[in-house]
Length: 397
Ligand code: NAD
Ligand code: MG
Figure 1 (cartoon, protein in one colour):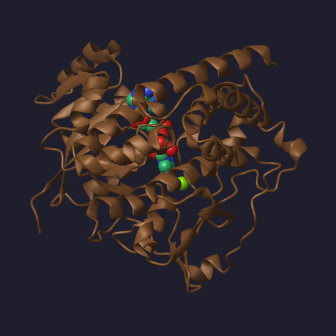
Figure 2 (cartoon, rainbow, N blue to C red; figure 1 turned 180 degrees about the horizontal axis):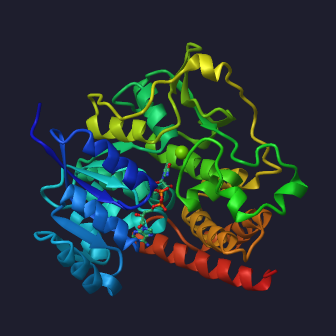
């Protein structure tokens, strides 16, 4: 086997970051941590530094740089370079000695370092779906030009990747008819419209099958997450939206499917544990133990499927609408949604108002920008956030 691989983990203290370090620590003969990044949660980052001894620890913002250096010193940890800020994140994402980069920062904040890893031709383990939602075309170009290897970590896209012929190109006549993205339906799958209007943040972040960060958990409850994943799939697999379907499958055992022209449907199954796609991304094209317990089909006993209800979950329809609009519309939707979800978690906004705010920002802002440059997309993101903040002020409850 090849030499030990050096891994940069962006967003190490998050849900995906922690799972990544768990898989890495099971295979010390294969992987070494080169760099870790975090935003806040310094105690957790310190503990990770104690275990993994990275060469770099990077804070998203410089405010607590000195404090963290002192924490490392008083823990007797020497030889770790502490850096901060966006340039430092881009540095560890494109570092010449990094073999693979786990892109697991949450939100639009993850875009620049993920792009840096792609441009530098890394093996990019792509969890940060917002990069593709905001700047899908630019990111895929950067990955191609940089010679990067993209391994999707989002469980659905990882499943599709596993079920597609490799290398996949839609123009190569490989017989793919469509992809079927599965969705658990979230904690409110069976809630009425009246019930949805009064759900609390605590209820929304309690996902029935997956344990995840707070933002993506709210997105799963509103089906915005599935919408972002449709956009993500459009770019990753270069398929038009009409060849991407969403199937609600409450057990979250089938992680997604690919339908072929001969009638075959290939599915990837497994327990809902992100360590499976993470281990797949780390070891591809090999397979390694992920620490995930075997799937017990007898205990699961049945698999159910239903169509998504777009009237109760309009965020999913908004994502298809943003794809139809094209240009910067997905970036606008993503940014508005980040503001909406933060306001919901802060109890400033009702759950059903998330979709109202997203729709309003999409209509008001999207047409003013294009997707040809990063600057334009960043401006669209900023304009959407401003619009969303204004909407919040007008609709405060
Ligand atoms: P999380 O909130 O648990 O962790 C986010 C990480 O990003 C933390 O390390 C945090 O310190 C860091 N971070 C937060 N804000 C930052 C900023 N402004 N600048 C730099 N770093 C910042 O999130 P998560 O659930 O691990 O999700 C990470 C990404 O993976 C998201 O894009 C999410 O959509 C995607 N994803 C997650 C899951 C999952 O199961 N958790 C599944 C699929 C995709
Ligand atoms: Mg997913």
